[in-house]
Length: 94
Image (cartoon, rainbow, N blue to C red):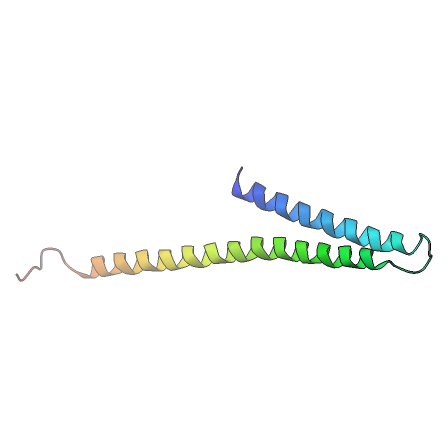
């Protein structure tokens, strides 16, 4: 599975969980006893929010970490190439 496709699946799952837990809270107002949300619904809501936050947080923090590592690697390569270009290979005094 491609990396972008995998991230899209994670984001879709997180969005679906958020939608489901919000619907459960809304439905909790209309079932007996009306106007009162049961504790189990609130616990499920909190767990759903935690799950979605974890999925999205891991996805975006991993992308940021990979981007930082890639940028550092490019800077190392550029500085190595600059140093190689600054030294004349025929100017060897040894």
